Figure 1 (tube, rainbow, N blue to C red):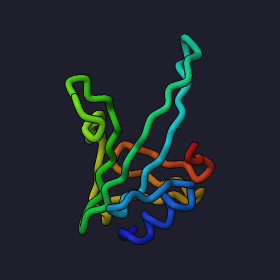
Figure 2 (cartoon, one colour):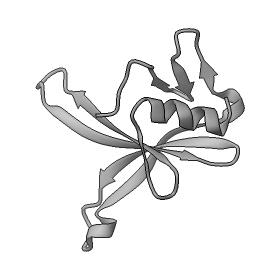
Figure 3 (cartoon, helix red, strand yellow):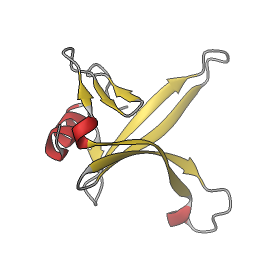
Figure 4 (tube, rainbow, N blue to C red):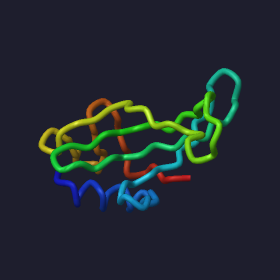
Amino acid sequence: MDKQEIKDFLVGLGCKVDRMGNPIMNVIKVNAVTGERMHKKIRFKLQSKSVRVELQVPNAESTTSYSANSWIRIDGEYYSRILKAEDGTVVIGTYTLNPNTRSA
């Protein structure tokens, strides 16, 4: 897969595109033990030869609103090594995107 194919796939899942052109997905996870719903943002940094998958986390030491959150890399892969299965599932490193998943 190339950069444009990945971007089209992510936008098709309902990702918003930020001002830098990076798709951002809102994910809701449910804790299996407590049943608590957790809202998370995942950003896909599309670079020339690879894609990075990043998670937004709160920055406790921040004193300004623009730096209240930080992005940490949770995965990444070169475009040439991204797998797309017959059922439409895309695997970026160890991060799996199912075509039935929708951004919240």
